Image: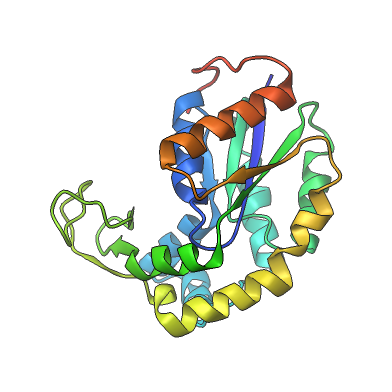
Length: 225
């Protein structure tokens, strides 16, 4: 059985960390639309330049651009055993498009909403850094302060994590993204995860939720990464 997971939650909830951990543990690709867009920005592409202007304001890139990115990514063969989507969908229109993309798949779309109090989210975002070289998101627990433990590059604050932009991102989440919870809540494949716990406990609850939905214990290593 393929494992198709959506990670929902506000900025700073830990979607990227938990999504990567789950994907690596089950050898399925983690598809981060934020990472894809940042790669485009780093490359200086036309899409990247346009996306940077929008993201630096704390706003969302247009639905159609995001839908096109995900449509292309889900057409690749490495998602045959499942995937973890992080950063998509962010609007109901994107969710409806994803339902259309999933129409030909027999395995369920599992929706996990990571919930964290707003004060904790603000604290996390204020201390988050990004590597200028490889784009890794650091969480303040690096062995060498200011240095990426993956490539040794310099860590700097993300332009979308300063105080003014953080407030704007919260507002955007409340108005555009939070309605996704209402869109998915009634589905039997929807679960809420307490994201205020330790990373290990969040990961444990996440796996338990997916196992409960699939009705059987997940076997790690079920596909190719």
